[in-house]
Image (tube, rainbow, N blue to C red; front, top):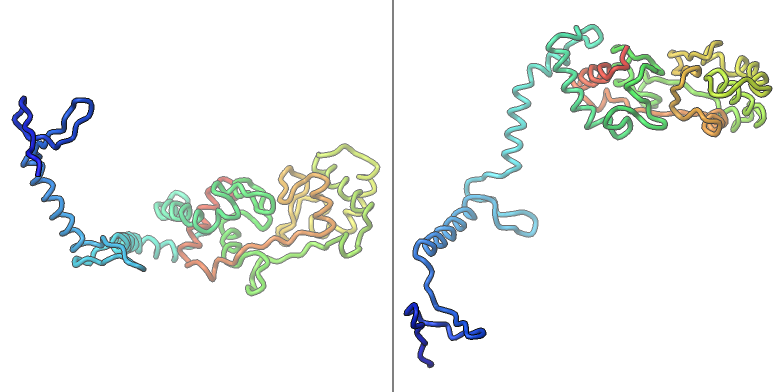
Length: 289
């Protein structure tokens, strides 16, 4: 056993390590630091006993206090649900079509609908409800089936083209090309006419030939003036709003193969309060009538 060397300047023993003439001292840790360290060890042991802490194969130890972050969240959610239960019940009972837009209940419905929209509707209509190709923009004033609160509520409850709902919104556009109703050159003339009345193309010989084709095949649903018919979900063809696109290629595809978009019937998925809240929120976006 070698004798420890004592540093002359401090009187403290060295560790025997030296780097370029610099020696490491064996200075003891301060008492206050050691007691703090021991206290943290005791605290950690107590925490592991009291709270979930040690990972196991499928879960963590539960702790003797029975606390968990999930349980805490569930408790807070139950408290929030209880606090809003009376309001939700009132919204569920309300006639949302006639509810005063300025009433506190309507304001609560719009706020609740905003949250419900993010959960249920943004996948198709987008976070801002602006939609995309094949999914309607809910901010504008172009509505296939109607944009007042009663119509929006009907659409939400029963959906569009849902085979298991007898009251669903239902219409069917013919596939004029696929089913051989019109020839390819006739479809192009019809495209020219539709783009003419939508002010997308100037008058042409094709558009003139397309006018009688429209009257014979399309006016029954879209109307003689081509402004649409909500009874059939037939869009207005004279404005600049297109669900599937208004360029020649998109219109050719639409006329050739038809379109038949679907929407879930939320009435069998969401409760009455949530349906009313969604109705209020969608109507409040700016395009509601």
